Amino acid sequence: MSVPVSNGDSRDQTEVNLATGTNRDRAVFDLLGNPRQWRQRAVERIDLTSALFEDRRRSVQAADLAGMLRPYIKRGHTHARLYLPIGTFPKGPLLDFAVTVDEKPAYLLPREAHGYFQAEYLNHLMLTHHGEELAPDVNDLLRRVCSFAPGVWQQLRQDLDSEREPVVAYLNATGLGTLVGKDPLEVGDVHDLVCVARSVGELVRQFAPQDVDSPSENPLLALPFLDAGGVHSLAVILATLEKLRNSLRLSSEHPVSEDRRFVATYADYGRHWDALVECVVPLERPFMIRTSEKRAVRLEEPFGEGSRKWLSDVGRKKAHQLINYGDASSNHVTCRITDSNVEFVSDGWRVLDERYGEIDALADAAEVTPEIVAFYDSKADRPNRLWLELPLRQTPAAAVGMWTVLFMIGTALISFLIFVFNWFESGRSHSLSGTDVAVILVPSAIAAALLLVREASTLSTRLNKYWRYGAAGVLGFLWLITLIFYGISKVKWGG
Image (cartoon, rainbow, N blue to C red):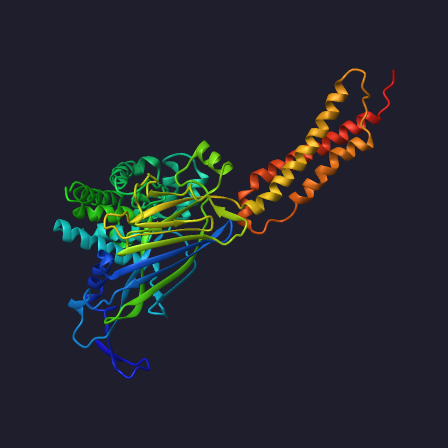
């Protein structure tokens, strides 16, 4: 279907509608499957603006799509309305998200539509690389996996510690028991489902980091949202899970890595989603895709647990950034700090893969200063996604205040220790005069005043949190013990 379009130019424009009809899905699959063919350059800028959030802006320079969409357009078509993949995002809420395509706002498809297209794309990969389509019930399960929202499951998982109880509680809370006619479900009822889900998880962990919130790794999380018209019993669901496992196993055992795309993409869709927008794009010239969003700042190590996480929290703070790095012909990344009191440790930054493993010789070029970390890469074998580990510290100018506080506290402590030694030395007066109190408390008061000065930003406050707590504790103890000794010295003991 062709539609004349007028945008004020003297030359008429003809738009082909690829957002409907039989070519809709195929156009999406072509764009999803070959992003480096049409995304020429991706530039991502990350600004650490506070202790809670970071600003992310990404611009993608797209080539003209006439070549990619040649099977679906005709001579004379200058523009196309279609569903355009703009990038992958972690599953979770979008904060202050905005997108423009060719300098015009674009419409982000709803979650259910994303689930449909991603499931159909997985079916397309299975057919392309293995010559067989997925069964309708497996396709329905994939839709639920791809559109899964983890909020309810995460809350229940935090409330319950047992390995199986959270899953059963979640399945009951989300209505699977009602769906299969057995409410409530018991642990024994889902034993076989759990066993098959574990085997699915083992396959997924070969291609993606372990993640208990991933419905790809644990497809039981998506079961309550299956099409009610196709579910009759737990046995039917078990058969669906077994078909999914068999398809994943077939793909994972293929000797050619390209033919393992089905299982690799399935594993990735449990943790990320390909964002699709409805928009009109030019076919005969390049255009820009711009996105912006906020994300929570991560200052703890991914996958860190127990003492390691606690030690990393107490020690030097590090910002951890997960970025897309292989979805264009070349990818450029820039990280900046907007807080004038905080800077990067120039020689301490690291680049790691998605499992948080070391990567050697990553970037084609890099520039690192206390204010900025920038690099880019265009190698064909670079990873699709990676972690940046960026150590943070106070700037020397901002550290002056901290060292002044520590100096004043040290002065007060030395004065107090001198008094204590005199107190216990025989023949010395066991009294604390007003002058002694002043010598101890005046530096303490100065330190307390400096300690109460508000930091310029929440980021620098978070970096200094533990030493400020420690300094406040030492000052409080010093004041209290000084007053106690002063009071004791004024008491007249009978004899």
